[in-house]
Length: 513
Image (tube, rainbow, N blue to C red; front, side, top):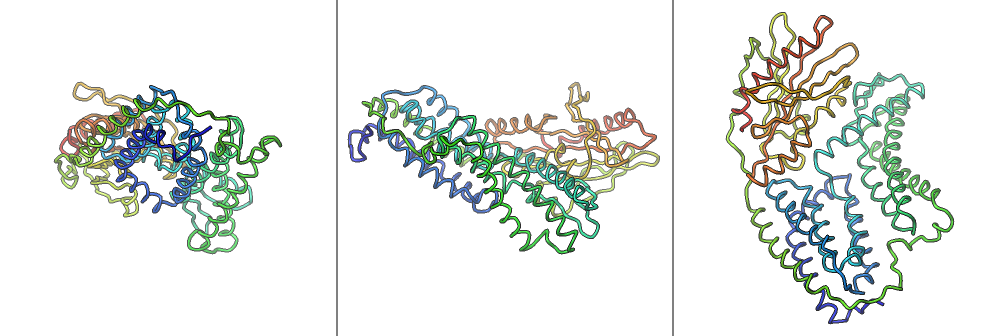
């Protein structure tokens, strides 16, 4: 039987754990405000406050596990506290936000595991799992997911339109109906459905006393239904636009249609999950994680020593976090791309500018875009985007995702190495096509004098540099050459390789080592 809330001896023993938890939460408050602003400003995570309330209610419903005390502890909890603390301080120093939210959840789980073993861990774990689905993912994941869903939604909706007999032309994420063009923008990628529905799938699984397999199935069903219904919504928008010539892709109709489809998606997900349940499982509604068995026996708690240890670690963590938070990200001196040479390899550059919309999306500190031209030779397009501090929403977008979004198809892609200054520089080599037009693309990520072909390796390097040097600057370098009928890939490779080496000679002045 659980102890009473008025049992003073219990609260004396658990006081250190609660103080440690309060200190962690206090240290996290600035990051918590960032998360709250994300919930307020982002339609994908407007359900965050509601899910937080459900998580807190779940803690209250499962309080018997905590009040029963525990005579055990888990050293895994101490390990989680240490790992989460290091990552938390590192992400503060590197000015990278998303990992901080996850480390808070990890710290809470570690504290309870270390203080009370599996009983205390099982007490908080369900609530923490719910909160995972209201934390915006790291920018690199979000960008890749957004572009991938945009393309999937575009492709599927176009297939449905053609099956319905509508004449349509697709150019990447632009659906051309002749009289009107529909752009499947980032807002139409389906994340506004996907994130809330994933949380709903997890919550439904927690309401029933069912196996882990069915809980994962509920999550999968919610995710799949959200993505498919978003494509159906775009398809219906196209049908109505084709039949009526109305501006249904924007304004009140677009907003109203979005809400209607969310309700339909919500209902369909509930129905499909219900079909997976047998009568016995259906009768367990409300007896999943929201109910704790009355057979729990109180333990003579011996967690005081471990709670004290946990509190000491947290007391050390708080000033370290404050010190890291007060530190400034170092922005190295560099020359502006305004002075980048317009004559290279006998070619003269014609400078170009990105649209304001593109600049707002990319959020670059500085960029260069120019087409280097020479008589009797295909032009070479050079793009360099520089970020003085890579943090949330400010990081290079992967061309692997952006290229298809521009209507081009990637026909081949591999990593090659260019010999330069006695080193091997990894470069992504991509051949893209749009109809009969083909282009050869080289691109890589340049950070502190090091080149990366992998965006994930570049991101890990950003975090590490932020920890050890407080620098998180970096850039994307991209070269493009058209492939004509009489131009072999071998010739284009030789030209781009030569141009890339010349670019690498100039880079340190504009992208600091």
